[in-house]
Amino acid sequence: MATPYYLTYMIHYSYSQFTKDVKSLEKDIRAYSPEAVVAIARGGVTFGHFISSLLDIRNFYTINSIHYNDTKKLDDIHIFNIPDLERYDTVLLVDDIVDSGDTIEEVIKVLKAKYPKLQIKTATLFYKKTAKIEPDFSVHEATDWIEFFWEKF
Image (cartoon, rainbow, N blue to C red; front, top):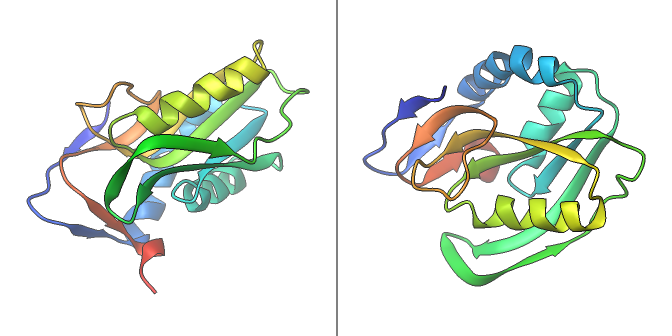
């Protein structure tokens, strides 16, 4: 179960905390035994890379979605760059955070429409309790905006 990560302002999510969190998810995700990892770009790419490396899963893909412009949520979700997952039975779909749940829900809908037999489990670093969907694997509950280390340069 995710531990609360209460925020009263925008916080910086550090590389050090990130590596600790990815390692904390390893055992549960390994038990699921995904054949491939699909990261929702852009937020899920760093997490996807690290978890696929940690689990030694070479089948790593990205799928693109546009639902935010900086911190502003857009009215619709555009899903594109859908990977070829025909040969897989189990996939881990990863993102940095489930905020409203709209994006991950739409990505799952698109993938299931294209690959109806595909079993999809989700993993995120953060999720909000108010989201439409709770990830299968997660570390923290979030109540505010998070500035991830990979967004700062």
